[in-house]
Image (tube, rainbow, N blue to C red; front, side, top):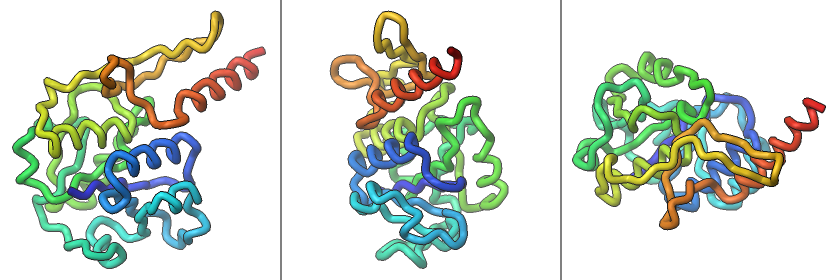
Length: 212
């Protein structure tokens, strides 16, 4: 099963690098593709951390990804699932046989969310079929993790354990609430990318410094 992230923005923030690195760990580099990077993007513009992990990327759009990615079949109309917060139908375990590719458009994880799905739906009206992952915003790695659980592990959405809007306390005075839904681990704690908690703490400290 192939998962595609339409990057749709200039550059790579530290947050995005950590998310993408975790997705590669979860899926394997052969199952993740970054598409639609800005025209003229060269390898030196891709974070070394991701390249070292085997990241596949292309500046081609969805219709032409196969021209750059080895052993990839062209996409067929109606066989590509777009994870869309505004879709009318939730993703089901039975969708595993309905779709060949799952597309995430940098559409999850923004707060407040930006309607990037509309751009994709307008661009590919026949290619993409929308599915929803509940009614709460997720980070990109969480959305992909949830999709993988439903499609590959065949666990229904309603049976997945989530943690909504967790608060991370760093000391007596510092705490940050994240405005997203996360899948939980075996201990009931939200699953974050490696290094994300440290980044959140650093950002929190920076924000506090800005206020003082």
